[in-house]
Image (tube, rainbow over all chains, first blue to last red; front, top):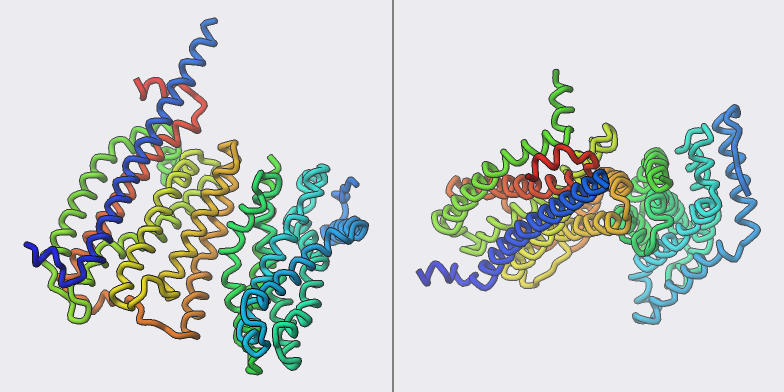
Length: 56
Length: 232
Length: 244
């Protein structure tokens, strides 16, 4: 197992590469969902404003 | 000064009227248009100051230095392209006057090049000599910069069309235009370098010419689209 | 017949619902393909004759590089569709592409540097691949800067659309200029990894990773695009139904 982790001596470069890649994937997932969440909140607020304006 | 090329006149006449008007207005304030030239000379001077002032060593970086200075000063000059007309409403008039907008913008870009690109090309031999270029290389330097500055003006017009009137527009203009200008830089600097070394530079010069032609055909259309977006 | 399909996708509520239905398929497909690719790439593929185990960086570098250019193309094409057919959904898709594409371009650069260090000896070389990726990153940053600088969404959409189209026309020109420029000067050993010469045990995981990352981009795109569609939609009725 540790032999596999060593990656023939390239571990110093290989694992950070994979780490950076999947970190960025995770960040993208988080960021995309946050953006969509904010958009939904914005839409709800807009609907609420429109509804309150039409009832007054 | 308002301009309204008559919609009944031909595009060519309209372009001539516009070009004459632009030239007339610009020459009222020549100082503004000479500023990018001064900037070019200042940037050129920075290279020997920051590197080795020995002419034989400067010669090796002369081509790159000339082109970087030319690129940066053309960015500065681009601010002048749409600034005045967008502020007094003439640009909108041009967009709706009924003449082909891309054609009118070509006229504006042509005058802009005459006032900023051409002077730079004419002054460049002085800068080149100051950076150690041999006299025999000057025609090559001139031609390369002439062709390149045309492309830079046109590509820059698209960027200027997108960013005039925006806050931090200058920095944004640089961020947008510089990557797009890289091919011109690569071939232009290569042609200049070959000229300075005394070698034949036809291949990169042909490519520079081809890029200038491509820019002259496509850039006005993109610039027209860009300006229309910015005018809304 | 084809055009009704086209305009149906352009309808925001339809797109929103459709994207919602596709999302789980894309997400799980991405996860499975990437997992399989990782097992194959990190475990099953034999070490390379020249680069030993170091070549395995290709399994993250190549998908990132592929994504960086593919996403820019999608961004430009959807921008063109939005501009020509005045389709808000297309602009929403285009806007969603930029942050994803920019981040994977950065990944391509970083993994390229980490791959270069053991192979060339330095973290950075002005080789055509890395230089092209760097310029592509600048193109993305210019796009994001422009979008950021314009407050009105519709105007930002149209301005960025023009920029994306101009950019995509330039990308091949820039790419070939950089290759030509690089051939003139010292050409350090490029990460030449010919697909044709790769044995299947190395190639299959690579294809799986490419597929997986593409599906991943699709999923991320749909998540963002749904939000962007909501931001651009003025007519509230279908939104109220969909959000309830």
